[in-house]
Image 1 (cartoon, rainbow, N blue to C red):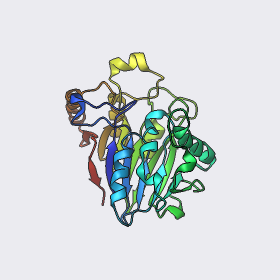
Image 2 (cartoon, helix red, strand yellow):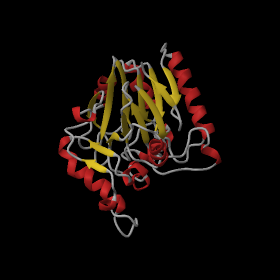
Image 3 (spheres, rainbow, N blue to C red):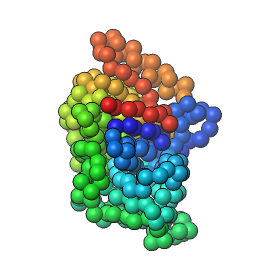
Image 4 (cartoon, rainbow, N blue to C red):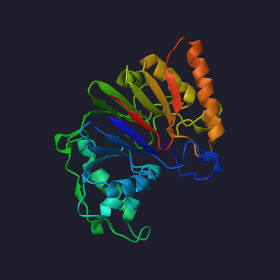
Length: 281
């Protein structure tokens, strides 16, 4: 599978000189399986640029859109997703079966008056909200497993598996506080155990977390422990705080690499950046 990052910032877009390296768009991933089928994870502001790319391609007329949850930073790009306006596209909106109507409403509300001039019913793409879940057969997808996130209002994390390679995506997941429906840290570790690649929410420093506990996000030190305990091969810090500068992210990565080395771990640690491409084969 090939993973392209179109947005990895948390909370809201942050354009400017301090985010040139890691990017300012909110959550959006493009995952392509070996057959080239496109799955999109989340509809943050990064979705706009992905849509422009898909519009220029031939043969990418059917795709899957998976949503982790419906907080605004993970949906705000949807009204500007150009394929939604063209009849040649079929968009399978995939998620937990019990959340089908919820996902339909979450997307449609992004285009409600008086907040947007185009109504959802005016979109020309064919939308399918009848998928049985992420990775369903109709989506011609790799294997996908789900886990409930520890986050206000809930959410879902995902494990993508193809040809024996695994990518685990746990954004907006608070390891230091158990929200309703959420799990304990060791359970997320079990879910990610041995994965080739883990992207995990690492929004806060320990000092920041003293004020932001229960807001739904983890510290980078909590995430390091989870990744080392789970013995994942690569760790990508994700959902960067909107006030976190490129220089500060560089410092965090250097700190965590030193801690992992001191613990005798070979874990590959990096901060995810906009435009990043990773191939697992």
